[in-house]
Image 1 (cartoon, one colour):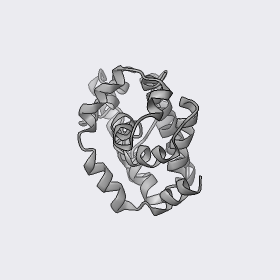
Image 2: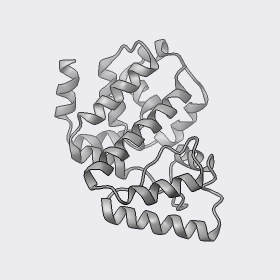
Image 3: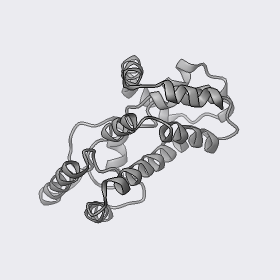
Length: 199
């Protein structure tokens, strides 16, 4: 565990972007989501294999998987998720902000990763009317202007109406509360994604 915390402390923004560049083809590798593997198979992976498989779990932030690998082996998918969450919680605030900013705006039709596109399509955000689209764009713009990162919500099980309502409500939060809320939503998203990969 000591090595884990040392690794988190040693990471800086330069390290973050180095790993991101080295895994620039993650979008193509997202196809691996279609095959679920066991935690035992995960535990046998070297670092490159581990990051290639799980680097996309936290949006465009393979540094989370890179650090989490150092805590192998994991007893379960849940322990792996807890470790990855802990990596983020112990990261520098600048890296946490970079993680939040890596997420796409919801419902704006801006180019996004394949996995985010499928998640948004699952709740109808790819089929918004012109009026709904304008509303999402306007709320996203207000949100980003207020908090300096995009509105993030684990959309699985939600509807476009509940997402809009949440966005309107969360615009009333303080920066500190919304920062924590956004990170908690990131953890939920990671949990859903990890569940799709590991049995």
